[in-house]
Image (cartoon, rainbow, N blue to C red; front, side, top):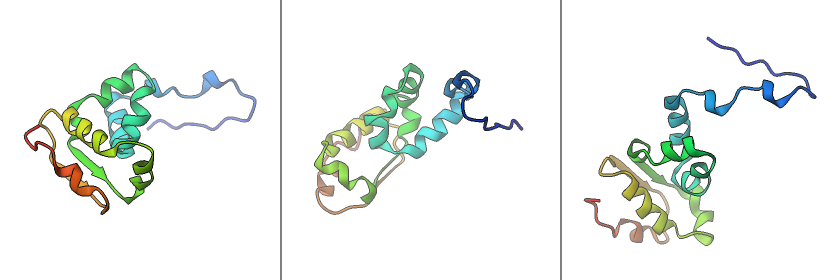
Amino acid sequence: METITVEEEGEDASSYPNWHDLPQDITTMILQKVGIIEILLNAQNVCHLWRKICNDPSIWRKIEITTAHISYYFLYDVVKMFHHAVHLSCGHLKSITIEFIAGSEFLLIYDPDR
């Protein structure tokens, strides 16, 4: 087991572990915990490796939109994001969880065969 030591302030940043050094399956597991909206808005734009992982259909087997995402409704087209996530699943989607009321019906008006 590898240990990571926190160094004192003033140490060179290059001495810290790099995200690119993580095995891809670990990065995938982390991104699966982030959530679809955060992946589509932020994570896929971090670097080429993360974009590649975010476009992998295995990331999109489970899609959850919960009350924690309700603030995004006022800023972004969550319905369009949901449709995009379903498209990215390439038919590997196993479960969908939609936890809030307003507008939820529009998320499900989409071809389930996609």
